[in-house]
Length: 38
Image 1 (cartoon, rainbow, N blue to C red):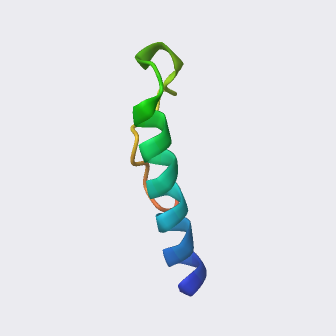
Image 2 (tube, rainbow, N blue to C red):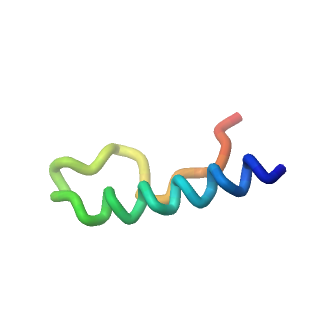
C-alpha cells in the first residue's frame, strides 16, 4: 500500500512538470492520471 502512495506522489510531481511544458508538448493524458490503470 505504501508503494501505491509513493506512485501517487510521483505522478503528482509529473503532472506539475507537464503543466509547465508548452501545450504542444503535453501528452494526450491529463496532468493528473489515475494512480493505477487496470
